[in-house]
Length: 116
Length: 120
Image (cartoon, rainbow over all chains, first blue to last red; front, side, top):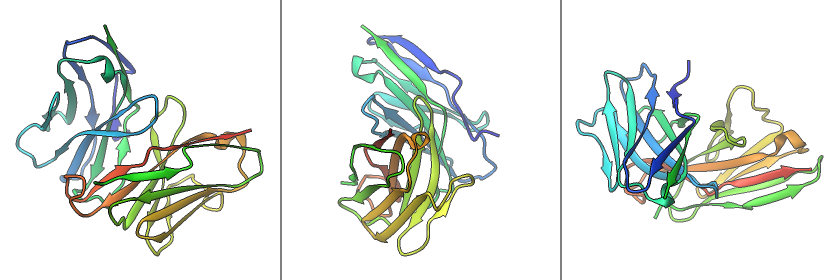
């Protein structure tokens, strides 16, 4: 079974609007971390936001927030006030366990296009 | 802090040659480094986990004799694609585990900028 599922291959959003990128995960480990990365055309993976499985509150980082619904095993990324520079691929990822010793499992990504 | 570099950023080689890709943690010591491969418009797939001073752990389906990984120091891991063929053309990304706080998160992984390999 896929550990990370991103069902939206592509999304469009109007500049200055908010957009939600979906991510669901599957794990039996009670301890895990969820990540979102942005990958522009240059290829680098840019860390956006992190949510630990035991975190009580949804993570926020500037215009990024993570809508963490543990019972539904979803970790959607919300980008507020979209900017043209937000156009990129976005990957949701999960690490089982709470240390960096374990690798990340990535979803298939969502290509976000911000329309002026 | 928490900067990871990769060299080269782009390489084109002839079929049958070997290519070495370096992954360096510039401002922290990385006991563990991970090597990922990404095909065009696809996700990142873990190839192997590299621990300093020991043999790498390869994922199922990854040929260890073809993708040689050496993690000789706490700041450097290398991936050598031996006898490269066109099907090895891909984007290779490393990440390094920082057990400190250099990046603001405790015990996190940080990605290099990637190496695009094209085998003719």
